[in-house]
Length: 353
Image (cartoon, rainbow, N blue to C red):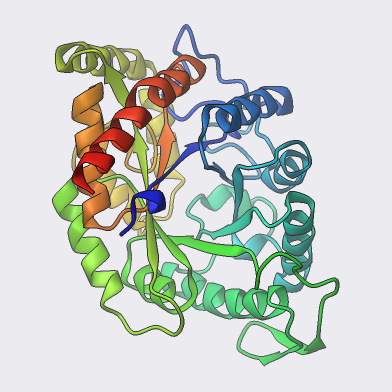
């Protein structure tokens, strides 16, 4: 794995916050203006990617503001120049033919910087209150397998004929084709057996929730050994970072964030109650307390700048290429990481080369 293959990204603030909604220095603002400022600054700081997560109503309560991620990605594509833009999509929410056309348009606007993150979906009210069926876990992945096959074909410029259990597409082709590469990058997350199988079969990059190094190494080894067509699967990981001058300062800040997050307990309980009980993400999260979503601090990127840099390189050695990061407060710590941790990672890489 080359030094240049290690990339850093940030979670766009589509949900307003990825940790406590009660932090006094980090109000849960999901406005377009805040997301615009955040991602323009992230690009200027050298972050190479951003993930725009998708919900239609906020899992923390439908009274909470939420950015629509696909129109947000299109707008960001027009005002950025380097950063990769990854938009999550739940297949049950939109037909693959329509989604493929939207993806090709954002790919064109961005000049070849767009990615699709297929997520199975776990928040039942979002679909059920809209009158959309919420099939059992494995059935949703069967649906997603057909869905992504159609999207892959159409975004690759092929004429698609497809007859399956869920979709029938008759001689469909989209123009204009992708002028920058074969098609937008396909990311896929999920830790269940159907998710791993679909990632090996259809994704370019497998997104993992943050976990201890040994667990991530085992997950990568399991998915990487599965048969697939095309180039080897690449790997990304979500993680919440707390980096300070010393390990003690970072641990003190972690304790502070745990204290603040006590106010979020009722909301977290409601989120879990409305989630699919078969969603592996929540089973993994129940193993230990953590700050942040999608694994959060479970990856233990908590410590001095040097400690965090070395832990990142350990994950990279295990196969993680892209680190999609969360912070709180966001602006201050996104800058801190770019100024203090990324240069250390690059220096350590250079010494090891």
